[in-house]
Length: 351
Image (cartoon, rainbow, N blue to C red; front, side):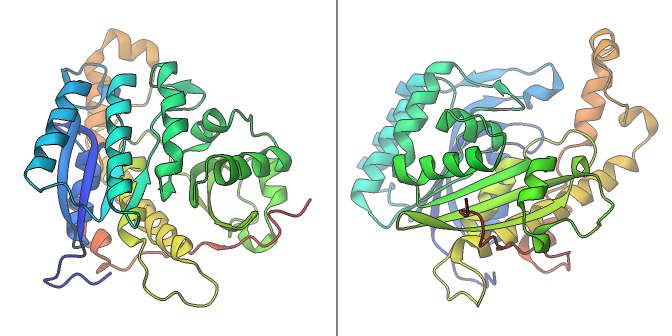
C-alpha cells in the first residue's frame, strides 16, 4: 500500500496501552500510521507493561470514563472515523460502553469499516470475566470483520472444534447467526485432522514437516447462505511473543480496501495475505533479534525457576518484545519478505 503524503482515512482505535513494549495499541497504532492512516487513540487500560512479565501495574478505564471521552469527542465533532478498531476492554461494563459506541457509529455511518478483535482468551483459558462473553456475542453483528483466535471462535459459537463438521458449524454460526460479513480465524494449530481436510495446494511446503510446526489462518467472506473461504499455512516460531494478534488485526484493517482485486483473491483474502506475511516477517525479525541477545536475556521457560527468580521471566519477555521500529520497512512494504498468499479453499463446504 503506497502512502505518499495522503491520509487513507481516520481510524478510531480502542484498546489497551502499555508504557513499555508492544501490545494492544502500542502494537497497532504505529503500523496503521506507517500505512497512511490518521489514528485517534483511546486507551482501555494504562499499564507499565504486559501481564506476561509477571509484575505489572497501572489503571483500567471505567465505563464512565470511556463514555465521557466518547461523548466529549462527539460534542466537539471529533467522532467521525471511517474505520473502527477495538481490542482488549477490561470488564463487562466497559465492554458495554464500547459496544454502545460501535452501535452509535454504525448507525451514523452504515459504511463504517469495523474490525472487532474479541479478546477473550487463548489456549483454553479466558482472560476476561465470563459475563463479558454474551456482550461480545451481542456486538458481533456490528462488525465488518472479526479476528478471533481458535479458542475465541469456540467460545463465541459454543462449538468445540474437533473436526470438519464442527469447523463448518462454527463458521456458519458466525456468518448466519451473528451476521458477520468477514471472519478471520488466526493462528490455528495445524492438527492432523485439519491437515487431512485441507486441499493439497494448501499444505505446508515441506512435506516432511510436523503439523505441530505449523499454524493455519482461515478467511471467510459471507455470500448468501454460504461463504467464500481462503486459507494458508505458515511455520510456527518457537517461544512466546506478545502483541502478535494486535499487530495482525491492525494490518488486516489497514489492507482491507475497496481497490480492485486480481483473479483468485477477494478484498478479505488480499488483506489477510498482507497481514499474515508482514506479521510473520516481523516475528522472524523479533526471533532473530532475541536469539542474538546475551544468554541471560534469553532464558528458557521454567515455571518453577521463574517463580523463584522473577528476573528470569522479565528478561525473557523484554527480549521478545516485537521489533516494530526496526521492522517498519516490513510494515510499509518497502522491504522484501516472503509473501504468504491465501488461496481459495473451494471444498470447504463440501460434506
